[in-house]
Image 1 (cartoon, one colour):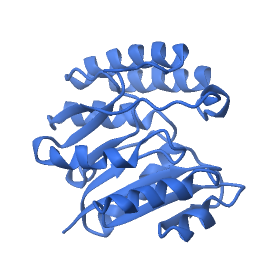
Image 2 (cartoon, rainbow, N blue to C red):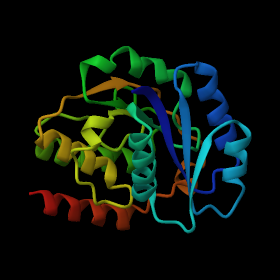
Image 3 (spheres, rainbow, N blue to C red):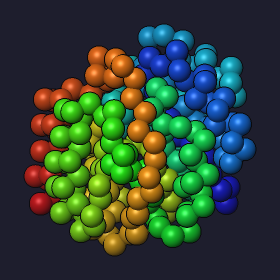
Image 4 (cartoon, helix red, strand yellow):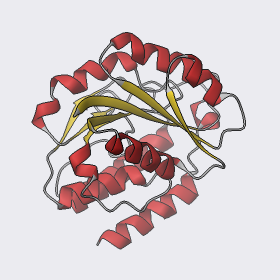
Length: 222
């Protein structure tokens, strides 16, 4: 089996995606970087390809969940053992990838937690994260401090055994809930909290709509 790839769901990230891919390559830790262009209207695909990423394209915007599922399917078919998921907007530091790989044999899912030092996280994001993490922990049967973190290492044998249906940001909680229920090992490691001055403005999360999706996810998994 091939060891590790990175899957990055991206939507209109032409300003950052090239830099993110380049910095991941510089770590020398992964065999392939897979950018799933989720119907971008800019040059996200071109910028990622220029830096050496494999680009998978959706003809229209389907949501982060669908983009991740496309990346997961590709990685599983290519025979990867582990997938590292990251965002394409620069909020995750590629230089922290080795921290996940150092403990990769200790768990089936490793979540990068921002909650050890959440300074800089917008207050509304901090509140919703605390709430969703509490509910996710109760359903997963495992205390998880940062259930909304998209910086993770996931073993592909876990994904093969999960029936994932979420199409938006709720996929991150769905993975943890369903993996926890099946008894997979979940652990967290600290990562750096990176937020830009216009993070809320740039965010693709809709507080009301995505909160309702999360509530529906919880109801389905009760």
